[in-house]
Length: 348
Image 1 (cartoon, rainbow, N blue to C red):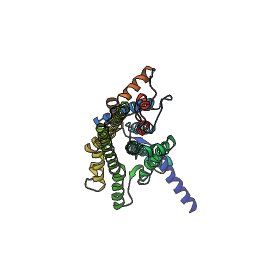
Image 2 (image 1 turned 90 degrees about the vertical axis):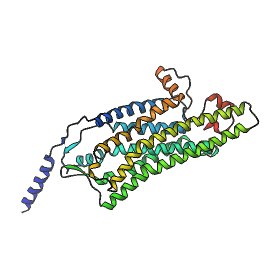
Image 3 (image 1 turned 180 degrees about the horizontal axis):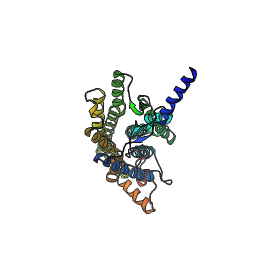
Image 4 (image 1 turned 90 degrees about the horizontal axis):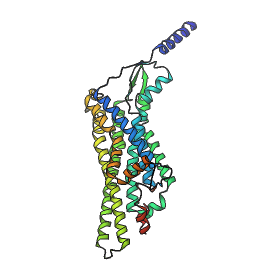
């Protein structure tokens, strides 16, 4: 009897491991081609941003470091956005199959990087608000070590936010399945993901941008109403203009984020709340909104290039190998203006 049981167990294990890894053929539909083009643009563009910002001779402040971290997150997102064949069958009782279904099939790394990008963009908005509206507090409390710690915390939070995917995704019946413990759990997770990944970051970014813009507007009015028009006042006005340029650029980045990610997240929330049925997944609307959402990973590069002349100059200098300035790109104004002004804004 024991021998029969052992033989049955061995037979079942043998059958499980005998199931082959079968991959579905790639279908080069328009959205797969768009996905590939988007991934290539994101990889090349964000790699360029990182090369410019992390030049070994360039001075970096917190904004440059955070924008570099944003480029890295978008770069990693783009790498894992490259289309790849999907699995048809796999030996579900092996650890490799479980790893594939829980990490690869659920696109765990891609979503962690995407959420890290969203959180980093939120941190940049807050960092600029503190630097401009509360410069003394900013100078006392923000340094390279704390900026690096902030980036580390962002990535930990991104992993934690997406940890549910490792639980709901698994290998079963020689295929990858995604199953929630209950319908209420699906509702709760879907709503939480929408709030944490999109709604709260969007609100924080918008409020920070508005408060920063209002502060800069009031400050510019104060300088304009002043009686003195000496060199120091002109230098202070130059600082305000430079800060406004960065804020305008970040506001455009925030707007593109909302336009790209908003429809995708809203529709996915409707799916989790069962407003949309299962036919939404992998349908035309779902595919189209996915391509639009991940276009955000390369759109920022074009915004930096088009809207920020210092970045264009630094990029051209890098290609020529003849950089005339190693100053920080996004964190301060020109060195000439910095020397002419004693304002706390000159260092932020």
